Image (tube, rainbow, N blue to C red; front, side, top):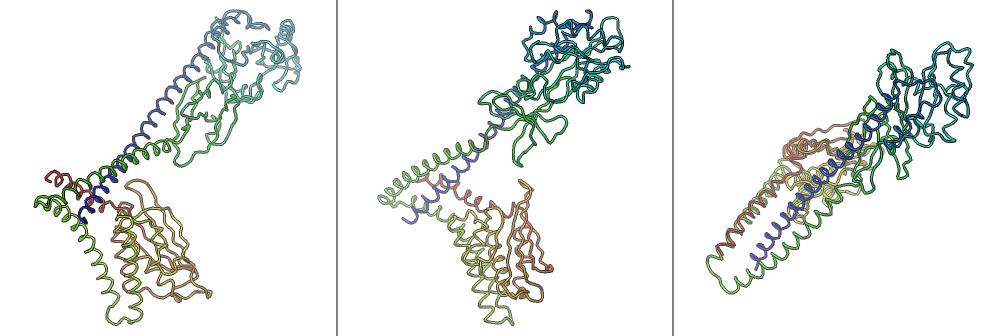
Length: 555
């Protein structure tokens, strides 16, 4: 019966391990699929945005070509082109004609604006203050016509943009480069609650060499760039061209706001670049939900199914084997059981030898020649107790590792309640657990008996962290006893010095140092995470498991 229990336990361990591996693989595959789906959705959305922007530029170029011949110093220049403008059904806010008017034609321009029926035909600056046209000695860029015409837009014609902080430099650059250009994001004149852009196209009439004016289209950024369907797997933001630390976002009502960029350290952010108005616009795509949550749920379901199957297999196997053993004590069956037991006993011998070797070293170093017998007895009992405690913890976890925090909080560490613990909740390998348990006992036992600089027990801080990722990850541990000094602290024993300086670092494949600061005693240990979280014990368990199907088949 004992052997049967071992077999069932071994099968259960294999089943649990396989369930965990399958769940882990499903978890990674689900995340990969979600990432791929997000990539595809982002690419499709970016192409749609680029197509939308290209349509707007195409409209601007076509209307620009239609304006190369007619007289442009009129207040109704856009009226003959109205059908062409609206044929594209683009969602512009205001289309405008900005004429570059020499000083001698400014009075005539005012008459044209009045004849066209605009509310304020006076020539005004960008702040809507009337200008004295007789004192102007340079050409002005004057808004002469708008589409659509309504109570809000009829007041805009007559304004000049030469001194406008955004449109002024934009018109000058468009006249120089002779191609459509877009502005930086700015509040729109026809919709002050929305942020948009203005697309400007210079108009050079046939036979002329200078720019006669500019065709402008203003668009709201929300429907133009930030439009996103309900249920989309991502959230969208537009990087502010003026400050990469800010971004423009839109809500469900297409209201746009500017906010600082806040990206978590582990967040997945995709960026795409679109072209519009002679410049690049950077779109940021944030996942709508954390793919790790869905992947974790799927992996949990797979793990539960695996555990259920393992339970069924173990139950059936136990039932069959129990009846087989009870009815027939055949030699071949006994050989099969003995083979399995040999593998398990070999693993047990390996672990027991390691533990006995450590205990032998502890006894030899502690009871060295000339050591005080009372002190040696106390240290020996404490060190063996520390080893016994870590073996109990490993046994509870089936030798799959021990939580580092559990080693420091265990009853084997003297006065563990006085240790301030700070660090991630990581599991360490059995080999590392044995070394670290002795190390923690050695540090804590000397700190407990050390005298204080201020008449109190030293305050102890145990801090660890993991730097880097993957195979390059590094484990950093720092033990610091405050309110103590080299003069007051009990010196480390010979065994403690060897353990702290050589045995523990070499067992973990790292380095260590200890020193006194002005007010504290510090011990620092640095080691690769590959040795701190070692898979050797699991590998040996897997090698044992590979023999199970063969012996079962022989039976």
